[in-house]
Image (cartoon, rainbow, N blue to C red):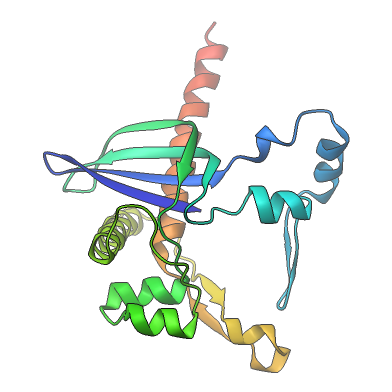
Length: 214
């Protein structure tokens, strides 16, 4: 999932969650559509995964690589300084990413230990900065997204949400089963995905009520 953030003034930040929209390529009632219904979902194993979609779609059309415009489905919110959602927008869009980080990179930025030169030389999942942005712009944006996600998360748990620990597979686990390890995921991505899901649920529920009352 791609994340975006923009300062729109008056203490309001526009935060977005964007996923590749494969509906442009998988049309209803086609053979591809029927085949993917049988697959249902991606199957994740410890050392590999079996994608639901064909490799061409997974590797060429679906990956949100930096410096490349992609067809996406987006949910965007205007959020005030108290992390309250003032407005939202949902729809299809064309979006380009300026940077791509691993979970490790993001965690280092949040903790203030990120070193760009070391990251590039070690090839730890960093793909470089594209467009007119500078390093400091990217770092500040990631920190702002983390701050908003953390406040939303604390508010959700404060209202009685179920708490489940979330882990991500460490790269060292790709070699052998014996060396596999689990690390805590950076919560920002999961939190924005939850906010997007809740936003979509409210819209669908409102639509169902309107259709029922007709």
